[in-house]
Length: 105
Image (cartoon, rainbow, N blue to C red; front, side):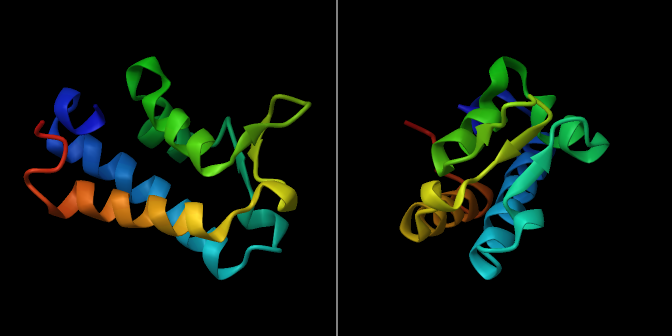
């Protein structure tokens, strides 16, 4: 839906940002700094949250990120980390950015 609704540049920025979070998580799954995203982070707000309807945040939730008890962070608990799910998300995000027919149907 993101690719259909938003201008290519805005969609690609969101895809690249979410992909970067996922790649960092794959590289360092036990590092807490790669398993959390501060919701108030300006870049996160501008690149991901700015997508109306929460589509960008929904992608993160599908990967396994959840709002923490404080409500300040999206966090990936070690128990929720599934390498295959994160790898699949990276593949789909890359396809969304490079395949002109992605999401056309």
